[in-house]
Image (tube, rainbow, N blue to C red; front, side):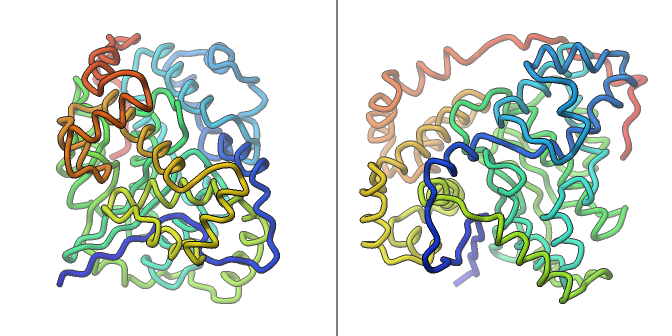
Length: 373
């Protein structure tokens, strides 16, 4: 049987006596570290836009982009990228921004990557602690049939402009991979969980490989054997110190961890109560009892995660509804349709029709816009 291992960014260790602090965790789930976004003002100026106007239009204070350690609401990240597109007229702004991102931009998880012994250890560690930077998205690493899939999915309900967020994330991920594996490294394929853009040239120029749109996930695909690559800055002592620091910050509630686990397990068709409890290092009955004490159930959380995933795929991709249903674990499309009506009050097809809107900013020709490929 082919190996099919799935790793999500979910805290698998359980610290005895640790409080769930569910209310605080749910609040944190909507925030993100500024990190790479500090590169936005410089890029805006190069494209002839005033950073202050852009940041103000996104509902933020310009000062938040002065420090990578500042935090903003997760929803503001998508708005900010959208306003960058509107003010510059450059539809592939997120790709240009992503090319400027390096390991140093991603803080503590990035340091853990740099000092890991192998590429596989680096990516798994990044997956595990990525939520310290961004609580609205989860990273994942999937290995199957000799192919590694390293990517991300947004799980924060109601996130807008996910196309821009995904473009930034996958472009930044490629830059980080090239920093670890060599500047000439190219993935076998790149997946995007949004519709094909009108102008494919910037995507082809930067990724230099097949770009496939209308996917249920956004990710880089490459030979799994590369995960054994030894990294030159490996430092076991430094890793231990950084892990202690990361674990001290990692005190998120059960519902938060459950949502992240479910969102990634849906990608591998393994989002069962037993499998989630195993990932969270808890007995199923213990997990159910603690969820009840927090006023929810496993099924309610699963429905919320499925609803958000369905809305994203309906709004931003052309994936057939039958395939969306299957990707969310429904054996029959009719069962998915009934569930979606219960969640949203409308049929999936109605939701898709309403979401077909004309972009608010026209694409600028790629001629004259500098890219680093």
